[in-house]
Image 1: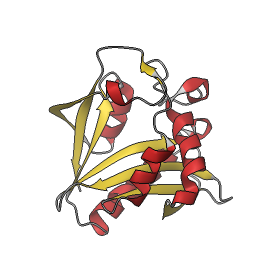
Image 2: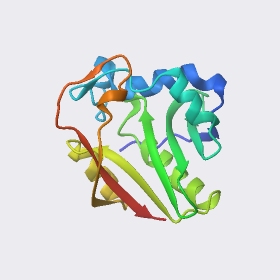
Image 3: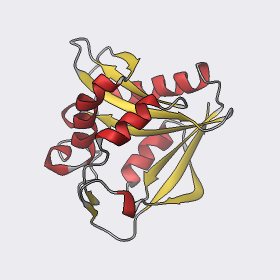
Length: 179
């Protein structure tokens, strides 16, 4: 396994929306996403998020989009953190450039997100939602200390961005980790 490249982290600003949208869409949807192992292209054919949705996530006082840049300054990945209450945070919108997946970038972003949630916000637990069919991804999170709960959350069929779901049985498995 190759060594994980050094990354620098910062919170996204509205100026980062175009690059962040492109990254998220490339990691989740469409043919380019198939270059990585985290694609949802066989499950959902939409754009994942739009500019307005990204702006809300960036500017909301209880959330942040954390950006990871490599040593050359290129955007390598991102994630969303939401402080739900004093004890619980949410981790989502996790994306790594599909051509750079499986090289440790995701592990580094996840570790930084956990450190931010516990160190800056003081939350004691993070939760995330993963489409239930993504067993390989769920297993990846379990290897990093997350536990699959019995809880589920509905899939947002009515909130898709310029597209549609390719299956009618989607829902989210809820995973959590004590920090």
